[in-house]
Image (tube, rainbow, N blue to C red; front, side):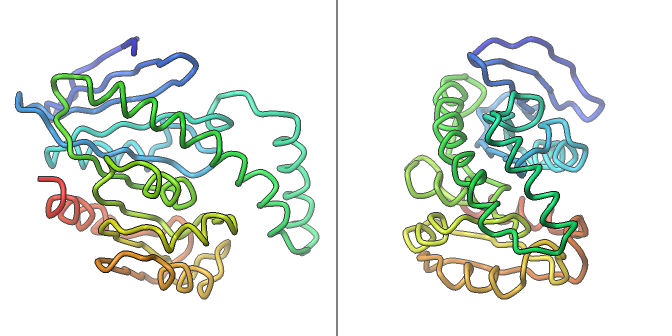
Length: 240
C-alpha cells in the first residue's frame, strides 16, 4: 500500500489517498492516537470513491472514532470497464428508456462486478489491518450485493450495514441465507429503482438472528442523515 497524498481536515481527521497495485482508495482516520476499529465503505456500482455523499458519511464515521476506507473496485469510478460492461450499460439505458424489463441485463454485469470486487476488498483489508493506526474489528457499510458476498467469505467482518437501493443478483440473494453477522438494512420506501417487495424478501432471507430494518419515505437518494448517525451507533455496539 502506497499513500499518494494526505491532508489534515478541520475536524482533526486525517484523509489519505492510496494505491494498492491497481486499486485506488481513500482512508480516513480519527484524530485519536489509539488504534481504531475499521469500516469498509463501498459505493454502488459506477460511482467514484470521491462521491460527495460517501465522503460525507465517511467523515462522519471517522469523527465518531472509526477508521474508514473506500476503494474504486474493478469497473467502478474511474477504473477501466470491459467492452462487455459498456455494452451491458448501453443495453440497460436503452431498456429503461423503452420501459422494458431490466433484470437480466443487471445480472449480466452486476454479478461479474461482485466476483471481481470482493477479492480486491479482501486484499485491501489485508493491507489496512497491517497499519498500526487500525486495530479492528471490521465493519462493512454500503453496496448490498458486494456486502453479502463479503459477509459470507470474510470472517474478519463482524457487522454490516446494507443499503437496499441497488440490484442484488440472484446468486447473492441465495447467499443472504448464509449471512450470520449483525445487520442493519436501510430501505427507501419509494425507491424508484428497487422494488420494495424484493428488498423486504431479501431482508427476510438473511440468516442472521440479529437484523434490523430501517425504512424511510423517499426515493433512492433520500436516506435521512440521522441514519448515518444511527449506523455509527450500530457499529459502536459491535466494533467497540
